[in-house]
Image 1: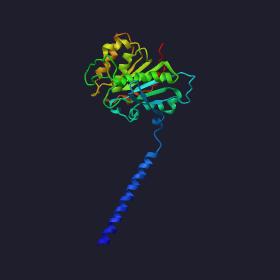
Image 2 (image 1 turned 30 degrees about the vertical axis):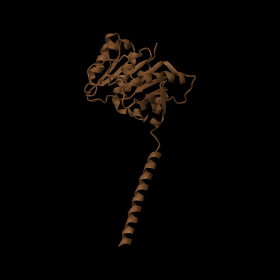
Image 3 (image 1 turned 60 degrees about the vertical axis):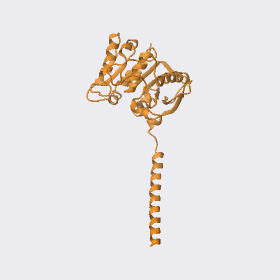
Image 4 (image 1 turned 180 degrees about the horizontal axis):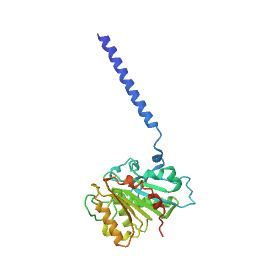
Length: 271
């Protein structure tokens, strides 16, 4: 009886070992699979400021980068769901469009996608209300993002007259915020389902903007974008605005699939 029990125990142990080895082999095979080429094209980097505070970011460089040429820089701000420290989640939505082979060939550029820490916002502003007040100073994450943009212009051959900014949701707020703070820095902006302080919009009235929102958005009220567009027009600007129906909060997927979006963006130059 005792020998039989030992034999059964040995068989069970061998079976568990085989299952464990199979699981390890599957995990190894999964990790060995080639990464998504669009994601792999973005180099993982970290910016560290004078205080020793860091901001993880990904950078897409032009193929066959030539430092003797000047290239546009696209700054992309992700949404709240992509906050973190993995330096990867910020590539979940939209931004990998710029890494498609046909896009890289037609529109060679740098693309910056920084990642906001879990407990912070790009803009310290209420997301749920119908109006917002821009803080006097940029948030810690926005401050580092601005410093990073300056640092990249010193490191690489970037055309200062062709800096573009886009963002979705929390990043849409970031887009409005940075355009209001730095209207002379950017050649164009694409804020998607975000919001800003419409009392500050006059400062950026002349910046080419193409904004997007869905009228049934329950997360960020469509009135936030409508107010910014109206304020720009009242100040003499001519922003483009596309309002969708039935998309809820996810208006970015359709916006980034608009066939005229990239041609419009890359046609913009600061005077």
